[in-house]
Length: 418
Image 1 (cartoon, rainbow, N blue to C red):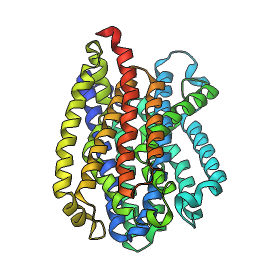
Image 2 (image 1 turned 60 degrees about the horizontal axis):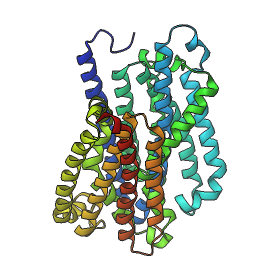
Image 3 (image 1 turned 135 degrees about the horizontal axis):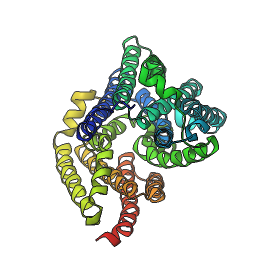
Image 4 (image 1 turned 180 degrees about the vertical axis):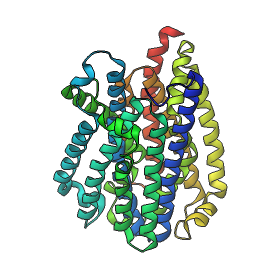
């Protein structure tokens, strides 16, 4: 029996949306607070290094989101299918840890090729932290996916929310005792093992022992495909500091912390609620599929309106707010903040159209939109412009091209339903 058993359909759905949505908001808020703490205790140059580490860490966490999604699907199949199919599949946690171990090993083996370019001249401690964190988070993704697949939404929400709060506590403690960039990085990474502390909980014990509903080889193949799709979105959503660092001279990137924090803060008002309720958006598009692309256009109009108001507010009060929140070293012109807010609107549209494409079952088109967006953004960063101009243009151009790819897929999929 799942955690939702015994509740009515409406009550269970409301609890799922509310609990998971709250956990997502807590996770996002805790992440932003970690970045604010880092900005306060590190010099701008040190914070630029930390932001590159943070982008790399959460890029890999985003990649492992594909493992979580596939685990959710496969566990659900196992529980919903009668017969001996569940007995033939591997245990979800064991399979997840094997995926994490393979990814961590590949990371360590290839680190000499990219370590210094991404993490600075002495990258090896940070590489070790990322590798450990990847292995630990693979366990988190497997357990969370198994909980979701079994419908244990309260336990799922507690796990997701607690992991982010532990990250905030560990990095806060490292900052309080003056451990610097390495200490904050270690705290951010070690929190990925939070799921081990839930091992005694009945729902988590059950989730750890569940089997997926497909043979191991089929599960591995599907997981690799899912991780390829989430890698494309993670590269643009959380991996931008890495893209900026590898396309920027070291002396210029050392001055990039104010810009990178501005990117983070201007995205928050749109992307936090949108990411928290992507599942609701997918349900909305499915429920109104007979109306063609109009539901997508209506929601997109709301995003554009919010983005326009936000860009105006960013230009007027953004520079003052940056200094108040982060300190005098984080001065960013209002025009740049307005441009970054507009580019955040473009990324929100890409997230929204991606949800619509997934709702229509067009997984390849979903991945294609994000891949094209990331490629265009990276290409724009190679232009011979100022740091600010390259960032604004990159973050706007890439998502807008990706939106076009998704929009074409939506139009083709809904043409017969109008």
